Image 1 (cartoon, rainbow, N blue to C red):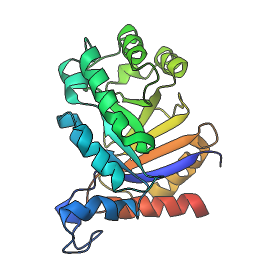
Image 2 (image 1 turned 90 degrees about the vertical axis):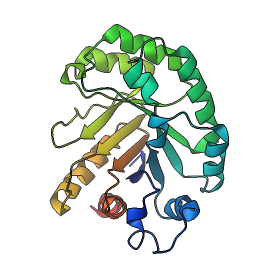
Image 3 (image 1 turned 180 degrees about the horizontal axis):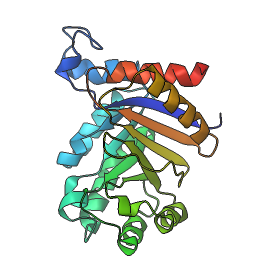
Length: 235
C-alpha cells in the first residue's frame, strides 16, 4: 500500500486509562511519552477550547519520536464562534503556533457546527487563507456539505474531507487531498466492524499518501487502535 497509515486516539491525558493502557501510578507528565511509544499519532481536543502556547507544543514535540504526529483540532473561536468568517488574525496566530511542532504536526481538523449549512464561497475563501501553510481537514456535520462542488473546491486546494462515523452520520468516502482524516466515533466497534474499516482503509490507501485514523477517548480506544492496525497489516 502506498499510503502511510497512522491510527490513534482522540487525546492521551486520561486518568481513566490508568491501570489499563497506562500503568496504575504513571504520572500525568509521563503519559504522552508512554503513549507515543505505543501509538503513532494522537488527536488533540485541547486546542479546540483554547489557543495553545508555543512552549507547550515545543514540549510535546520533545517528548515524542520523530515519526509521531499530532492532529490539532482548530479553535472553536474560528469554527463555532466566528463560523469561518473574519478569522484571519486568529487563524494565522494558531497556524504559526502549531508550526512549533515541526515535522510532528499532522493535519488541522476544522470541525464545523451541526447547524452551519453549505456555503461554497465561504469554504473557498477560508481554505484560501490557509494557503498551504498546514494540511487541513474539514468535518462537516450538516449533510448539505456532502456535494460534488464542495469536494471539487477541496480537491483544488488539497483540503481533506474528514470521513466521520457517528451513531447518526457517516460522511462520504471521498478522497480530496493527499491525506485522509478518519474519525471513528461510534460507541462500539466489534471485530466485524473493525474488519470492515480495515478493508475500507486499505482501499483509501490506494489513492492517497497518508491516512490518519482516530477513535474516541473511551477506555477501549488505545486497544481498538492497535487492533485495527493489526487487521490492516494482516487482513
